[in-house]
Image (cartoon, rainbow, N blue to C red; front, side, top):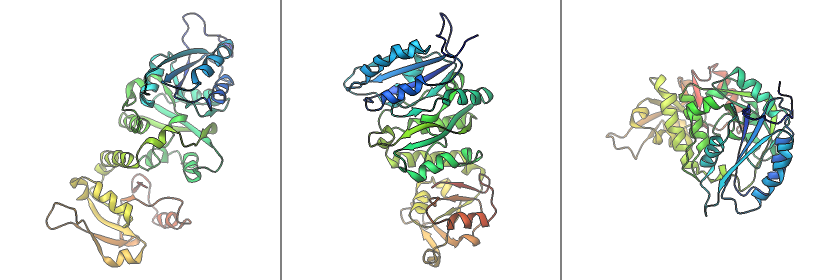
Length: 357
C-alpha cells in the first residue's frame, strides 16, 4: 500500500496531478511550490508545470524546487516553450494536463497558495461526485480586496452554485480552486486556446453545465487567492464576459419561460434587454423597479429597434410585476433593501428568478 511521502514507483501512475501553468511568476512561485510540498494527501501526487514563455526567473525557481518535491515522493513533470510571446492560460493548462498522468486534476495558479489539506479533501469529494467540478472557500490576499466578490465565492448556498451561473462574477466556484477527474475533463474540455482576453474558465464552465456536470464546494478555506494588477483574469474585457453571459442565459434559462420580467428599469436592465435576440426580447413583458421616477414614465421604448412600431415595454413597481424575473440588481449594494424586497415575494430561485447582476 502506498504511504504518504512514498515516491511514485516504476509504472505506477499518480492519483492526482496538480496542474500549474506558469508565466513570469517569480514573485510568488516559492510560496506556491512550498504549498504543493506541504500537502497531506495520502495518495500519490504529481506536479505538472508548463512554462508559457516566462522571461523572468520562474524556471530557475522551479528547478530549485524539483529535487525537494521529488525527494518527498512527488513526481515532477516540466514542459514549456520559449517563444517570444506567451500562448495564454488556456493553452498552458491544456499542455500541463496533456503531459500529466493523474486520474484527478487539481488546478493551481502560480500566484496562489494551497492549504495542506486541499488535495486530500477535494479528492475525497471528487471520488463521490465524478461528474462534478469541486471548488472550495478562499482567503483573499491582500485581506479586504474584492470584499463583495470574496463573500459571494464563500457564501453561496449549495443550490446557488447552479442558479447563480449567469452573474458577472463568473463561475460559481472559481478556477484556481477547481478539482475534477481526468475522465470528466476529457469529456468536457479542452480549454479554449484563444489566448489573452479569452475567458477560458467561463467557457469551460458553461460547457461543463451543458454536459450535465454538477458543481460542489468543499466548505473549508483551502486556498490563499491573490489579487494583484498582473492577474490574467484582469485582461478579459467586461464586454466579452457580458456577451458570453447573455448567450448562456438565452440558451440555459430563458427557453423554460414563456415570458419574463427584467428587474431593473435602469441602465443594466435596459442593456440586457437590448442585448437579447429578437425572440428573447418578445418574451419580456415588463421591467420592474422601486424607483418612482422610472415607474411614472410608464414604459421603456427601444429606440434602436428595427421593428415598427418600436417596442414599448411597461415599467411597473416590483409588487405589480409577475415572475419569473431576471434580476439585474447588484447584490449587497442596497443595504439589504433589494434582498428584503425579493424575499417578501416568497419566490424560488432558479424556478421563479435568476440573477444576472
